[in-house]
Image (cartoon, rainbow, N blue to C red; front, side, top):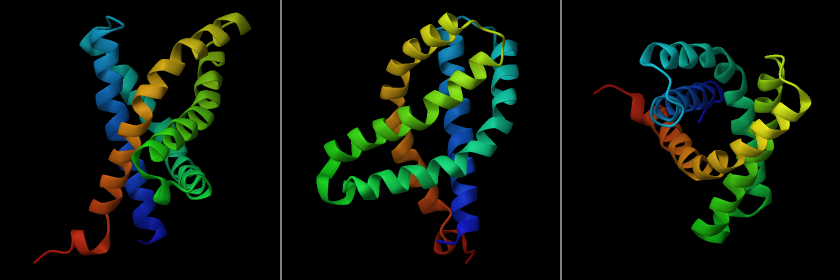
Length: 143
């Protein structure tokens, strides 16, 4: 797959996954209104556009380093969780800190976010791969 197509696939996968999962969490867990959640999701798009490809590269490297291809579902799951937490947590911490939160608030928010990141890591990794498969040259050709 070309770097351009893989970049587009990574951006599409993070924006679509973040939009759907983030909105569900905001509506059903956090109690935001639909308008608040839509505003939050729209504000997340530029951030996701910037971090999607670097995360994809980092995840690919970590999965290759950890031998995910040889280790089966459990190893891939553990490596996806490790990649997601180690990449997304610093980004999340910077976003929370950027709101003016205190150091204690940032730490508390990050600790609270760990569970969500663990639960989302493997589904997102699988979704990313599905999107990459869709964006391959052969699957985008018209008949």
